[in-house]
Amino acid sequence: MSTCGEVPREDYSDFVPSSLLYAQPCKPIMIGHFNSLFIPIIYSIVLLLGVFGNGMLIFIIARYKHSRTLMDTFIFHLAVADFLLVLTLPFWMTEAISGWVFGSAMCKITGGIFALNLYSSILFLVCISFDRYMAIIHAIHIHRKRKPMYIHSACLIVWASCVLLAVIDLIFRDVYEPSYLDLKACTYLFGAENAESWKLALRLVHHCLGFFLPVAAMLYCYCMIFRTLWHTSIFKRQKSLKVIVAIVVVFVACWLPYNAVLFVDTLQSLGAIETHCAMLNILDISRTITQSLGLVHSCLNPLLYAFIGVKFRREMLSVLADIGSLKVPRLISRQSSREGGTSSEL
Image 1 (cartoon, one colour):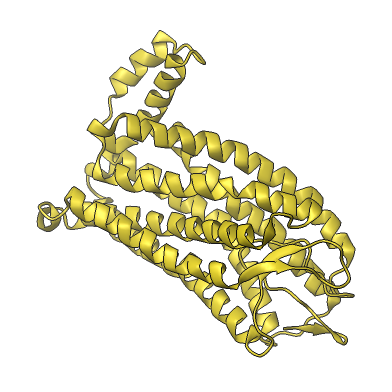
Image 2: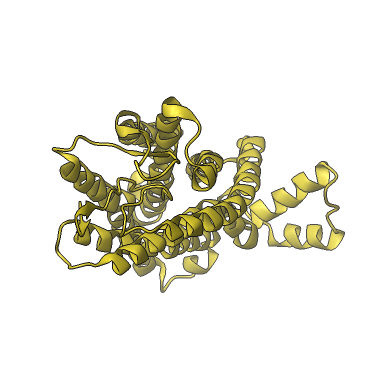
């Protein structure tokens, strides 16, 4: 751990910003006041948009399963992961305001669910990118192999892999109460002898599996796709490709700042860069802000489908009209009919 004076900077949380882990004087109480105001506001917005948007996306794909494409299966699982992810936000909002009051078992379970769906959301984006790559670049060779069984198997492998990653939270997360505060926090607790090693290992896992490797895989897939389709008329008809590329761009824009801040914090923990108390405070506030931006990503995918995806927009208006929340103008219906669209345009 980094130090400021004689007091270690006790900071174990890599996935969920905790407003309660302060090491005086490097983490003054004012940071807690900032988190107690900032986190509930941002997380409340993400929760409302995420539950409605992803819930609507899940409902639409499940409702029209007869016309579901193989890519829609990945999108369905992505929406489920984002939906479950935002359901954990009320717990972290409560922690930021009044400390962790849900007990040790809920600390482990909530942290595990958060990590499970955070990683699965990212890996399903990779699956969608790879599916487009195989369907376009290797269309002839892979046509007979690209069957529902393989898609469902890939989804199962993603969930199983993320469950293994979530076991880390089930083992190491626990309730922690600093001696100088009356509030408790749900965070990672390691033995004094290997705390540094475990923290570094978790950071490397998060950097590699949570951002850099997925981004590298997605960039490779779409660079190859663009190189193949750029000078063809097919490129203009790839509406589903435009949606997916927008999703990837939004993912990078949302999570790059947080990973950059986390990388600087990792270098600081390793002693690679010299720091002082003011910089440590800036890093902690930056982590809170950038991670909140990253979590906004979980509610943006449905908005992209609504604004770019013709089919999803049409089906969403139809669902809202069916439940009496919205009357679809005939002009919109006629325009949607002219635009047509296949299931792959979701």
